[in-house]
Each structure stands twice: as C-alpha cells, then as structure tokens.
Image (cartoon, rainbow, N blue to C red; front, side):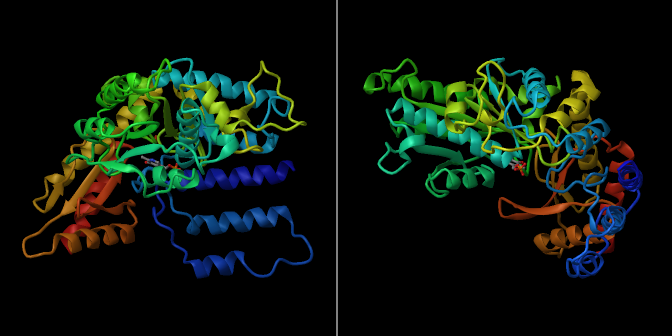
Length: 474
Ligand SMILES: *Cc1c(COP(=O)(O)O)cnc(C)c1O
C-alpha cells in the first residue's frame, strides 16, 4: 500500500509541477486515449502499480491543464495545495458523510467550515449550509427549499402531495439566469419554460423596476431567482433593490388574504456561483450588498474557492424549509438531534466528506488570504482587458467589474463574428492559454474568466501576447 500511494503521489507531484509549462490543451485524441486505456477487461486482475502508471501516463496528454495558471475557460478555478492534500485524506478515510454516526469528523468539519463560509460572505449565522456537488445542485436544493416554503405557507405539503393540484407558484428569473436554474426548475416539476423572465440591461443585470411590475401583476406563492455574477460579464443583479421589491411584494398583498406574519409567500434565491465571493474582498463586497437578505444562496467551492471538483454550497435562511425539502427519514438512520447530520441539507444520502478540502483551503489562506485571492483574480482580469484593448482590432464588451472579460475582435473588411471565432480557435490550438467562446447579445465573443489561485501577472502578459499574436496572424 505504501509504495502504491507513494507512486500516486509522485505522479501527482510531477503532474502539478509541470502544469504551468505544458500546453494548456489536451494533446492526445480520443482514439489515442482509447488505445492507451481501453481493450477488454481481462479475467485476471492487474497490478495496481501498473494501473496507476497507465492512468498517469495517459493523463499527461489526455487532460486539459484546467487546474493550471493559464486556463481561462468557463469559470473553473484550480486547487490550492492544502485542498488537494486534504482531498487525498478524504479518499483514504472513505467516510460516508451522510450522518454524524458514520463520521463524527466530517459532521464537525462541516459545522466549522459552514461558520467560516458564512463569515467570509457576511451571511447571517442562522443560515443552514449544505455541501453539494456543484452550483447546479445548490440551485436545485435551494429551489426545493423555496418550493417547500411558499407552498407550505399556502397550506400545501409538496413533499407529501407533489405538485399536481397544488396552488400555482409563480417563478421569476431574468433573461440572463444561468441555465442550471432552468435545469433545477425542470427537476422540481415547475418546468423549464414556465418562468417569467425579467429583461436585463446592457451588462446582463436584472431590471429591478420590471421585477417590481411583474410582482405587482401576479399574486400568490412566488419564487424570485436573482444572480450575483453573470457568467459572461461578471455583472451583479441589483440585489438590494431586488430584495426591496420582494419585501414590498410580501407586504403589499398581506391584506389580500395572506395573513401570515410574512404576508404573501415570496422567496428570494440568489445564484452566486462565483460572484458570491466578491463578498470576501473588501474592495468588491459592495457588489453583493443586500445578499444577506436572500432566503437562499447557491454557490460553488470548486470555482473560486479553489478546491478540487466537485464541490458546491447552498445557504438557506429557513432551516425548517431546508430540512423539510431534503431530510431523509428511515428507521435505521439514527438522528441525534444535537449533532449535525449532513444529509439533512443535501439531496444525496451517502456522500464523501466534501467540506474537508474547503476547510483546508480556507485555513491555509485565512480571511485576508481569501480576499486577496479574489482581488488578485479581478486585478488580473482588468490587466488582460487593458492589454488586449490597446490593440486597434479588439473591443472589450463588458464593464470589467469582477473576474470576467468579454472580448470581440473586429477588423475593417472582416466579419467580426467570424474573426472572433477564428481567434478563439487559434488560441485553443496555440496552447499557451485556453479560452472559450460565447454569444453575447447576438455577438460572438471570447470569454476570459480568471479564477485560479496560481495565476500570476506574467501568466496574464504571456496570454495576452499569445492572443494578440493569433489575431495578427489571421
Ligand atoms: C457555473 C455556474 C453554475 C453551475 O455550477 P456547477 O458547479 O457547474 O454545477 C450556476 N450558475 C452560475 C452563475 C455559474 O457560473
């Protein structure tokens, strides 16, 4: 066992030591990977050492260096060293983190980490926290709690009775809500196409004035989905104004039959997959101002908190709704009532100790370190935007308020959409850095997302030079 784990550790170290200088793209084709890894599963087992060697060799060319410093596609983050090491321990322990009785350690680490996370994001201590696989499942969990809560206030037990025959629930999103919100709505039986979509402004922010009109024109149980951090522009919905509109809607119809203490049941959910962590940087915290008023917040740890995949977080201001939507009960599950049973806050039953790498990441940085990491990524985003836009054929399409930059290439006599797509393809082929494309308000654009702890100013300069080099060759 020792020599096997030593070998895995050597492979991992070699991988991570080389990650900053290898091509960012994968260099093996799927056919080459199949040839290296496939074939029939033999009747006899093989040596674990040989299997680990085979995997490590394939990984050198078959992985994308998305954990490295010059990967700017999607919003992927990297993994802080303390988080990687802690994640190895989680695998070695092989704890089922479903209930306290199965893993007191994970239960307690979740509790401690939940407290630190609330503090970093300036959220109320009373919010419950679930450790899920990603923001998709965080959105799902939050909206399940929302569904529970608004329907319970309308006298309907949705967990027992389902949605058929239930009072209708108005779901409000924006035109720019992330597609995982709609996926969550699908899974929850609301349907993906039934939401009222509030228009957005030029940066992709929900129009609070239109939200107010939508809320005034509807009655009954309602769920509003706002966003902190647009996946293209990094822009934030005006959360304080949205929360204000929600408060007014709750109060406005109190006299029309909603006599509960909270008036009309309106739930405010915020998808803050990466944007929530602006809260950790004193210079950016104003962007999420008002978010502590949300009923639920979904976010990721595997993006900007730089822990290994997969790791998401859901915060909920209504512990009873959170538990009501998620808690399992079976005769053999021993709830302790005083200790934290992690399954009560997430859709899964059996699960790994996902909080442990987050615990290690946060402890290795401290509050100032987390804020500095967030701020540094934002500075790098501004730096690459600045360098790119000095070129006469580059246009930055967004206000760079966070870690996201939208770039368009536009030369006289060229179709800008085509040129932009050609630059993106050229950059991906070049391998100095990796960037993806998007369509923003009907324009092709290149997305830059800076979210890795290890990215330096030099990585930014090298990447900008590579991008402009591709442009000049086209
Ligand atoms: C990435 C992202 C999600 C989905 O998160 P996963 O971790 O991929 O499940 C949801 N919302 C926004 C705004 C995102 O950026």
